[in-house]
Amino acid sequence: MIFKRIGILCIVVLNIFVATGCCVSVKKNNDSQNLELPIYDFNNKKIGSINCYNYLMLIDNNILYTKLPKGKEATDSLNEMEYWLYDIESQNNYQLLTINEWVGNETFEAIEKDSHFYLGVSTGEYANLENSKLTIYDIDVSSRTMSPILIINGAVPYNSYTIVDNKLILSELLYNGDTDLVEYDLSIHRSEPLIHEYDENDCFVHDSIRHLYSDAKYLYALRVDWDDDERYSLFLDKYSFDYDLIDTIDITQTCILKEFELNDAEIQNECRQFVSYFFVKDDFFYYENFSITSFIGYLKSGNLYRLFDTYDFSYVLCPTQNSNKTMFIQRNGYDSDDEKKRNVFFLVDSKTYEVKIANFFADDKNYGFKNASMNKDGMILLTMGYSPLSEGKRLPDRLYYISIDDLNFDPQ
Image (cartoon, rainbow, N blue to C red; front, side, top):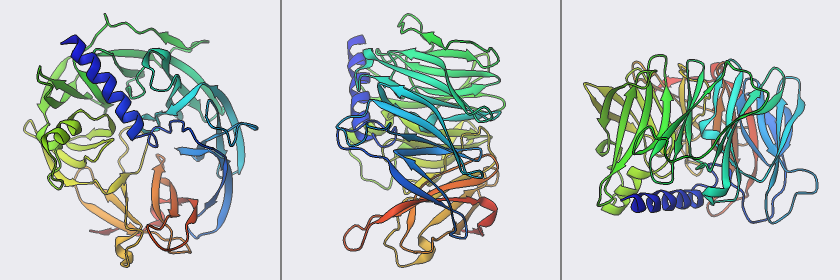
């Protein structure tokens, strides 16, 4: 059984590395270059620009972005990456640090506490678990620094982490399919990062934790289990902050999309997928994996119920835990003739489940939504572009820095 679990975890990791490279910004074997990315406000006025390889997210009123060092552009591999902050209001750039043996970013796991942003960066050998590591960096906006605080040697690039009280809790996936928990006390100021060595003798659960999330009361874990016939099940576990298991719910069937005619092998694949976004707010539940399953639901009487699917939406990343604003953007609709079905923001009330919508257009209405992130004050960094499926001219990407208060939301 152990050999089966080792093979299963390694195969899943390698497959998802290939299938979801854009999600974790993994390096590619083709020519690469920095590009100029203009920034506009709500009224389509240009307010700045960044020269970047990739922008990652909005943190406070700054854009965190990566950049290829001088002389490293147009090469056939990426093994060195610079990290920068761009202050939108002052239009100043600040270089944070350069990372060698760079593989990718866990932007989807980024989390904020007291204007400190915690971002996981994978380094080492691509898709070689034994020679890889995951480093959690503390990005301090006030001092404009990016410092390593926790290093996980032999790490899977999809280890999840959250903050409980003043501790960063990370679920370390082990090669045998088990999961350990690693704690880092954020109140202790160390001169060097804490290094965690790989050890299969340390184990929290004999299953694979796909994602962690915590609110003000509980720690939640999405956990994958499987039997001797390699049939997968997905569970939602609720813990106290002392790691006492309070409740567990089998949510396997709820996470199977009825809109797609999936065969049994495809359903099993959906159950074991790594998870990009997941949170619980009171009874409000959101789940999105790196494949096709994405939905909003609610918890009641020990069960999880679906409200509606969001497979054609994109979650607006907000690194602040327990934010009272949950937003999505429409993932498609570039070619729709109906403007009301294009460039749509969806604002969901986590208490009433009411959905409100708002449209936003660039001065050139061919521009469509691509992705977005939001800070705790409701400022949104939105990427817009246009890549025609057949006819038409491709438009270069733009960033828009707008406030949620500028959008005119109406009930759906």
